[in-house]
Length: 221
Length: 221
DNA sequence: AAAGCCTATATTGTCGACAATAATTGACAA
DNA sequence: TTGTCAATTATTGTCGACAATATAGGCTTT
Image (tube, rainbow over all chains, first blue to last red; front, side):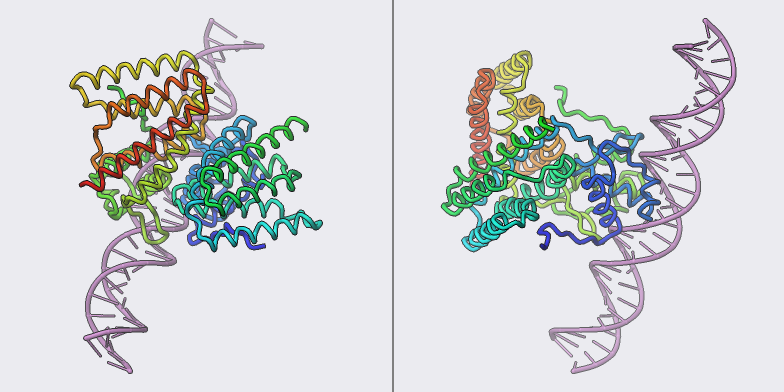
């Protein structure tokens, strides 16, 4: 499946940024560990300057924290941090759903329904492999559908990868697939009806449920 | 009055970042203009490296836009951009008010009431000079009161200065002071009652009204 | 005259070296 | 033994030079 979020690197700093970001999200570089500029520059075969630029961008995504004259560390994952992250996500994606109900074209809404149907077929069959990709695509389309550049930038460039980092490293795969699918369906219906108020409410609930589900999972492991 | 948002520069890149940010917000550097690295490095008497780092940080705040191998430009202010900015602000500060109602200490709420009273006295007298500072302080305290680091970072480090840039350059000073004061009072009351739902709704309305007021002002000038 | 190409110029991207600051180690004294 | 201070080491911050890319202007060609 083609990744909707594919970005292409132009400069060396881009490549280093993408590699580093991936290594952090996939925990090839451990959460909480220190990022040595010289070490990384030898590892990725680039100068310290491009490593510094890459680290700066990672800081913008809240994936690393820098202290002046000390250095950068990968963020630590905490239950509290996850809750705070999801509170912001609830707020922003709620607004995204509201705006999507207002601004998506009829054609885009039809495409969204298609996506949902494909997702449904995958869930029905045994191919549960792509359930997360499907979920990501769903949320991604609604975010883009808001047509609000600030919102898109904050979510896609800013928060998405940190959310993914929590997902990957805390090992949240399923289930909640079928219930989540129902929620997705209702959200699309609200958007299709151009019911901004309901779209926002349902999206916020959807994210809240998802959060609660994760919290329970964390307690029982 | 002491600025609640005072930050202290440690490194040279910090200083350059703060100066540049201020020059952009106050329109000493015009919106939409190109930022030449060599020009700025001579202007601020630092190397290109620190200018580049400063520009990178400005990009994180959405105050400039960079294109690879081309350079950075100060963002252009548009009516559409302002609307989108306020949509995000409504969403995030609404959540901030909700969380503030949940997480602020009784003491912090008392301080907030004090602030409001001082603000009221200033409005009653002829000293309308600080009305904006008062408004900023009010919103700032509620944002901090959310106790959500992500939210605080997004609003204070990220969006605040862009909002201020619009305010300064589109010349929005008053009035709407007394009506805004009433709205502030009601928000504080909701927070004091620990009514999260109402606090969020009132904050969102408050920001929506403010937006509409700005839109009208733009039409009539 | 218009379009396309090529050269010249300016700007950004990258690099390695040096300076300034923080962390570490070891010696010394209480 | 432990705490403090000093010197050493390592890491980040800053700089100027070079390489790669984009822009501008003139030239050629149709």
